Every structure is written in structure tokens, then in C-alpha cells.
Image (cartoon, rainbow, N blue to C red):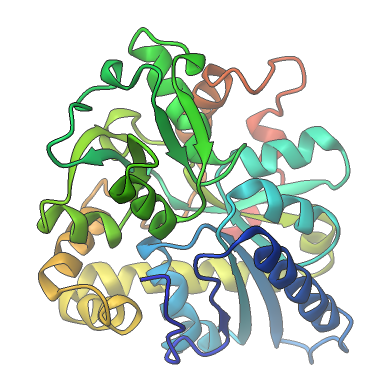
Length: 348
């Protein structure tokens, strides 16, 4: 996973494990490509085109894959293009703030930062993930079996200022530690983090599906802390759009969320279909039994996927607590639920 470009992911730009210079080059190419798309002539009435920026891809993007490749977006007169990054919400948020892309996929920290910066007025149009997706693991057989045992050790995150960075900091605090008690290291996406724990460069890293299930089934890692269950319902991954763009073209964003809800209805109602779609995207490197475990985890109610995509006050409050508890946000300029959800009602 992450090392291969899957030709079945037509229209998607997949960025595997990258070194810094290569990653920046691909980011710049992505910006140029999407900027060119934005400059194209507007679509005919009733036909929409949106570009999506996704931070740190994983198994959770199966619904987006289905929207693009299984006809759900097309049925709603919507054409989607996608650019994927492995750097967390920070870099992609900066690109989005610069005017590239129409929808940003990232943790709630992304729209909060954008609102705080006052560079662009945004609205959270929906929620894809209502729980964390990562599990903190160490190498199987190592002495690192609790958060306390990691004191003084290197612990991996995808990138500084990423949602999993904030979640880790809060977890440490809730377990009687300070973030400074460990060496938090930005290691990139899940494949790079897995390589770091295998090689001993990190004592613990954060893995997500499908790498997580593969590593557990091979008894290569041992769990330390499960963010999926320990921190409750939250806006772990949201869809963010520019308020001005929503006002100018509300139909496109409503079509996006309508496509998402119909995908989720289909995935939840038809287990064989869910398996087919997940296998198309991830099956080349993931055993069927592991894919089924992931689907069960993501689709249960309440699972990791939000079935209706609605950004709720409960999610906002829980995520606000997480972000404030990380020590990286201040209460003074933290946007209210109303500010983040100004045009959310238009998406229902």
C-alpha cells in the first residue's frame, strides 16, 4: 500500500511515500493542475465540477472512491477530481487558502485554522469521519506497551499540526503526561510510519487501515492506544468549502453531499457491494479478511464513517475539547459552531 499507483483509481492523483523535495514538486504540480481546472469555463446549468484536496489518504476514502468511480457523483451531475497528500492538514490547508481546490478534506483543525487566519471565510459542509482512524502501536515484543512507557522515546505523527498530532497530545495529557515527555516526530503517511517502527527509528507510530490490520494480522506490531474508541465522537475528517463559492454555486456542494449520503446508504445496505468497492481500491495489497474487518469497523453504528454526513454540535464540542486540550489552540479566537457551519443547512 502506498508504493503502487493503482490504475483503477481513474481521475485520482495518488501520492505514495515521498521524500521532501519530491513531495514539494508534486504539490506544486498539483497546484498548477488544479488552478488550471479552476480557470476553465463554467459548466452548463445543472452540471457541476469540483476539485477535492485530501490530506493523508487511507481506507476511509472508500466512499469518495465510490462517488467518483461508481456513478454516484455522475448521477448528481457532478464531476470530481482529486489530489491526495501525505502531509496532514497543514500543507493542504495552505494550498486551499491560496485558492486551489474546491473542497478540503481534513480534520476540524483545518477549517478552524482557516477561519482564525481570516484569509478565507469557510463553511464545513459535512463530516466523513466521526471518530479517529489511528491506533498507536509499537513493534511486537518491544517494552513499549503503554503511553507512560514511551517517555523519552520517538513517537510518530503524519505531520506537525495534523489532526493526529493534536489527538496524540491530548491522549498524553489525559494519561498524566506532557507532550514534551516524548519526542514527537513528523514521519509522513502510514507506510512511512510503519517502516519507522519496523526499523526501530521510532518506538511508536500511528497506523490506520489497511496497513494497521495487515501489521496486526502478521503480529508485527502491538497496540498501545486506540484513538478510534478512546476519544469519542468527533469531527475527525470534514469537508470544508469556501463560503463565497457556496453562495455562488450552492447546487454543486449540495450535489457533493447528496452523492456522499447515497454512497453511504448503499455501502451500509449492501455488504457485498461494500466489499467489492473496498477491494477495488485496496484489495491489491490487503487480504479479503482484513478488508472485511475494516468495513465492519467503519460501517457499524456508530462507526468511523458518518452515515449522514451531518456536522453536529456534539462533534464540534468534542473536537473543540481535543484541539484546545492539545495546547495548540487558544480559546480567544476559536470559531463557534455557527461560524464553522454557516451554510451547513444548505447541504441537507
